[in-house]
Amino acid sequence: MLFRELNRSATKTYLIGCEKTQEVALIDPVLEKTDRYLALLAYYGYTLNSIIDTHTHADHLTGSWELRDLTDAPVIMHRRAPAPHVDMHVEDGQLIRVGTLTLHVLATPGHTPDSMCLHAMDRVFTGDTLFIHGTGRTDFPEGDPGDQYDSIYHKLFPLPDSTLVFPGHDYRGHTQSTIGEEKQTNPRVAGRSRQEYVDLMNNLHLSLPDKIQEVLQPNQSAIEDQSIQFPSLSALNDVRQLSAQEVQAQRESPTPPLLLDVREPDEYSDDLGHIPGSILIPLKEVPVRAGEIERHKSSHIIVVCRAGVRSTTAAAILTGLGFGHVSNLRGGMLDWNEQQLPIAR
Image (cartoon, rainbow, N blue to C red):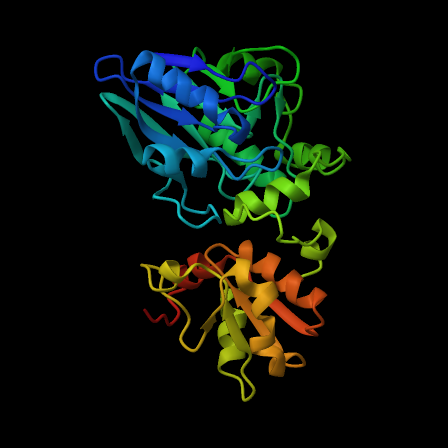
């Protein structure tokens, strides 16, 4: 097995691959390190087989889109990832092949809904789910400490105690740990009940990462246009969230809302389909095309996307532009399909 940690910093990027075929995957690449990754691939003659983000990052811009554009390697993320243009969505239990090497996907929501870990042979790449003597924060939008506790105890801790742990971050100079060590000594989770963990995580009062506004929403939307003014986290938190069943009830009411889909055009007709009667304005075009729905400024508008994340951003943008009654479809078209509600393509 080929293996290297590439960044030598608090934010980790891992190269893992097949020694026989010289095919490799990059796990959690950082945009500013793209040239370094490409140089290493060229120097050793490795073929980039896949680019994997363990979750939607809030503290650094992902290098996945840039690397995909330069190498044609596919971008792989969990099914709940909000960003468009992901080439392969994976779920719990799926396998990612890198030459003769197999990466086992473990869905581990909590830090984010799309968090996942990757188990390969004697090691597991834990993203921001489990750190060395710590865990990833759960106070970002859609984070859930209870889900994270379940992920750690039911997906990671059942692995053999000797399994090497390689996290997405380390701030104390550690390079690796083991599942057994974390089960025994991790101060966040060892010996704590689920409720004790939830109480702990809900009272950490951590400061936000630097430049979160310039990082989180671009990663969620794959929009790199610096002219886009993304709304604040407080504005996002103020967006009214409706379940799929609540949106369907609104559709069937005497005064149905305007349904605004803010995905990319190719997504509008993909396997998830779209809600019948919805109109399409991609997120990056909402600020300049809002005039097209000006007549609905006092009406109810429900915004829709893949996972309910980009649409929350669009709803906050519309609210900031003076639209008075804007809601979001929580869980997006993923939840809509899971509820087996009507779709069109």
